[in-house]
Image 1 (tube, rainbow, N blue to C red):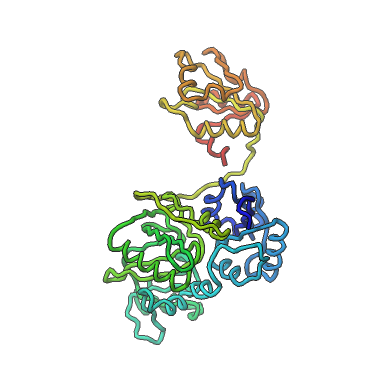
Image 2 (cartoon, one colour; image 1 turned 120 degrees about the horizontal axis):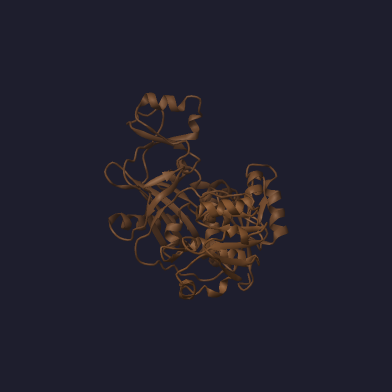
Length: 429
């Protein structure tokens, strides 16, 4: 492959937390052009992702043929799976020779997609939980989870035989595995390998999770747990001859010994913990696939990530001209409001005039604008009198950003739009 040309990268399925991490890793990269696909037609209607295409569900009989058509029509060089089932299917597909799947071998995917196969395959490589059959004398409490699954979906702590019977009522017991209950700390280790040799293993805590995604996670780079996890990473990587990005999870048993929970051949949902340390796994994997020799160097220090839901908005955000108040809007407590600055430059990117409108009487306006280097970003500066209403200077198609409720109300009544500071971020979506 020619390294100098921009490569089209397809992410599927778009809309998962995994896909969000992939997109965040590449969105500003000039070497790789992001394309996304989803099976959710409603998402296409509301998404802010410009290059979003439809593909049927991975279990649909037309999925493979439709994917191949999309790859050909869009000139896709790389496909990055954002779900375990997609990673498994793609690893076994025959794709065009100039299109590469970012992931692991079909053999590795076929094993790690199932907990039973994973534990059986790795039980002599790393410590794994004990597995029990229904006919066994089960030492409760135990933990039950789908054999083929990820995250915490359909998993449950089982304190006794009655709870186990109730859980399995109406369910196919063969689809679940009964495991030793691991009560201790849980970790994810984001990994990067080169033909089986581990290049980097970045462990992080899983202190709070929602649907299997870490919402409070912190990195660490020393101590007995770190050393044990490094050893496990090297053993797993060598066993499966891992190449590129992957991750695994481990948890402490009742004696404090770390045992394997799962291995995955894709991007992890909270891989940004290590991305904040300078390790962009997705970009590294792409350069590795191109054939470039890559090095993995993490920045020192701890990273803590706290995650919340990320709202996306769709409403009428159109305007022709942006007017921005100064005091307590652009300048708040002596500092620039960075969201307002972002909206200003978004308007300028769209070739929309930007007007600064103010009643500032302290004769510090020019000094402040010069101090922050923003004197020239406005198309005009309206310095109005105290008794003048800002609505006298607005017209249909204008958008005013102002902290004053009275000013916003007056502008709305005049036929223009006005927003408070809490809405600015919605216009940046």
